[in-house]
Each structure stands twice: as C-alpha cells, then as structure tokens.
Image (cartoon, rainbow, N blue to C red; front, side, top):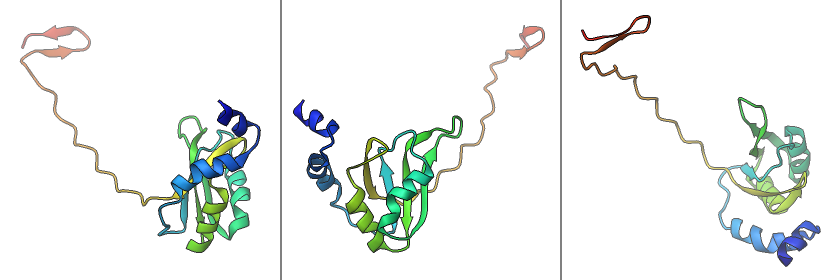
Length: 138
C-alpha cells in the first residue's frame, strides 16, 4: 500500500528502480521503440514532444482503434540512429506522460500475416432452404 502512495504522490525514483531495470536488459537492434502504457488522451504531437529531446525523430505514432478512433494505449517512436533511441529508452522508461507511467521497449519487427482461409461451401444434407417460403425436403 505504501508503494502506491509513493507512486501517486509523484516519486518516480521508485518506479525507476523497480520497473525500468527489468525492462532494460535487451539491446536495441533498430532505432524504433515500442511505447506502452499511454493515456487514451495522448496524441501523436504529445508523444513527439516528449521524445524529441533525445534526438531527431523520424516518426512518433500513437496507434488508434479503427472503429472508434481512440488510442489503444501504445505507440511507436523512431529515431535516425540506434544511439538516440537508446538514450530515449533510458530517459523515458518508467516516466510519467499525460498522467500515466509509460514503458519503452525495443520494437519487434512486424510478422507477416497468414492469408485468410478460402471460404468453404456449405454442407448440404438433402434439405434446402428457401428464405421466402421456408424449407423444402428436396
């Protein structure tokens, strides 16, 4: 309970020591970062402003739901070099952005999706339906 009081009272050193050390073990192989824990109100511009102090950004994108247009709570940030991305990862991991604690991890390459299966023909058991009349026992 005391941990939650410290988190919400504004002490980010506890967050730094408990969460960021767990997530900083993997090394970066590309300058693209995955940012999770974003507020639903974080925009592309807010994400860009928060991360641009660590180097020259090539992209800052919050992923949104297609149907509602609301943020899904994560996004991606890309830098020109891996060194800039590493600085941003160390500087922004387990920090507050728009009132939420965010986590910064290396982005995994997107996997190609399998094509959808071809549609199957409906099974016919000798009973056919006619939507205007009902069923027939043909």
